[in-house]
Length: 81
Length: 186
Image (cartoon, rainbow over the protein chains, first blue to last red):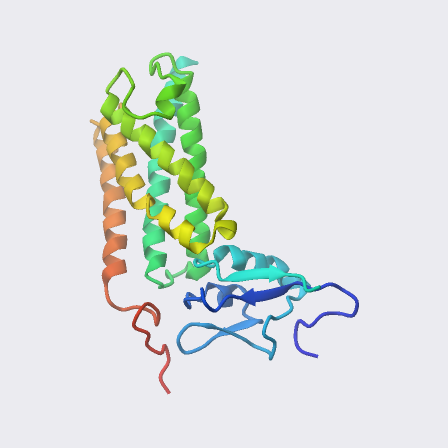
């Protein structure tokens, strides 16, 4: 089971990156280091093979912080379903 | 009580200018895409927002205290429509203009997730006009504008913004911007 995957039955928040907006500022990777890395050009890379990674409960505050801090508003949190 | 309102009005105005200087300098710095030592990337945007909102709060106190201040003799209309005040209408009007601009910029910034980056960025460009207008208002309307410390403080504000612009224009981008270069080699 990948790091941060949902526990059974709990609705998890997922992080969506709008790649048409992302400009590689990199503040999201600073706030969510376990979830996101940076590629050579400064764009975030999801560390495990999920397009919209599930946010572990302990990272929810940091994820909301990342959404607020993104200078180009490329991040969004959502709950699937 | 009157002295208190008067002092509060002057003090909050000047500290608001300092807050907006910090906000503008950090905004220009973060636009360059480089992290600041000790602040990182998200730290810049956090401090930018905190300084801006603190400035907004101080401007609210600035307006409220001067509205009730018997020396200033301001009317509510002077807070909305620029250049109609009876005393030094030009300098006061610049302050009114700054308040109007600040109100729009603040509302759009708080609603930026709904309005989207294009509206947000277009409106946020107004801050480049807002800061010089507020600075001129401080120098023109400020009761203490003739004193050494006031001049020193406003000069420091100008230096901070000029330094941020200079840093922004130096070419060593940290791997972002129009021409992209890998951060690491090999």
